[in-house]
Each structure stands twice: as structure tokens, then as C-alpha cells.
Length: 208
Image: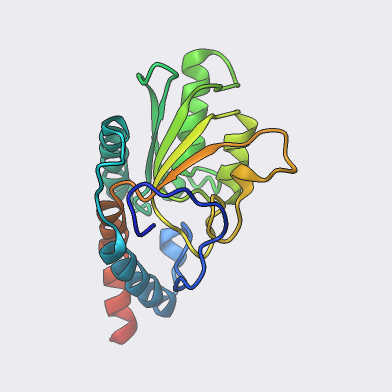
């Protein structure tokens, strides 16, 4: 998460504590869970709401948070995503489904992009915005580029595996033919708290 709710991220954040990616819920080591829980507690406290964030982004993140909470029903890490069309209308939603499907690629972003492409009957999503509760990983960043998504809005930073400004910045790599506008840290406290609450029981287990 950024220190502001709307953050332009020109390079990888420096001096940030280690965090976590989006691991398989059933394979999280208890010690690692403790580290991740502490990370999100710190990052959640760092976030703040600000007037610079467009109201549409705040509303869309609310929809993504709803999807993230729904992921908890299947034991998946709570990450949710939505895709907005060029006119701002909701095109598609997605949430982590790796546990329930057994599909290692079933990240919220990938599922939302697939659904949006189906809704438009076009694999190119020019002019569209992806809103997701956690900074995309390298796989999802690649999917954003392949779909030609114009804009990315995310909530919590992922300083261990993030590919939109943390560990790497795949979505704005000048060597690639497409680049994505990035807005980071939107409703970061809520996004971080979901992850913190998910990993807290695993953290307790590491102390037993």
C-alpha cells in the first residue's frame, strides 16, 4: 500500500518491509504467515483516504472488496477485482478461486479479465480499467498487458511479489509495446485488513 491513497509509482518503493504475494491458502507456512500478518498490519496503518482519489475509483474498489470477501467462502486468499468499461460501467468481476478450482492461474485479475473479454466479445480491453484489492503479481501484470487494459487501480501493495511498482514494474516497462496507467493505495486500509484477518489464525498457529 502507498502512504497516500492515490500514488504515482515511478519506481519500486524503497525501504518497505517484506510482505507476501497471493499464496495457496492451504500451503502457507505458519512462520511465513506470521511475517505476512505483521506486514499487512503495518501497511494498513500507513494507508489513508484522500480527496485526490476519484469517487468512481472508491466505488469500484468497494465492489472489488465485496468480491474479496466472497473469496473467503471458499478458503481462498481474499483478493477481488472488477473491470470497468471505457464509460465507467461495470463489465465484469472476479475473485481468487485457486482453492475451489484447483487452477493455479485463477487469480482475481485473470478471472475478471476473462469475463470482461467475454462480455465485450473482444480480447482487447482498450480504454478499460482493472480495479483490484492487491497489487498484481507478474502473471496478472502480463495479462493486463496482453488485454491492453488502459488503467490499473489497486489497494494494497505487495512488496514481495508485486509487479506494478513494488518488486518490479511490468505494467510500465518502456521496453514493452503497451503500458498501463497506475493508481495505487485506494482504500488501502480495508484491503490490507482483509489480508491481515485471513492470515491471523495461521500466525496464531505458529505460536502454539
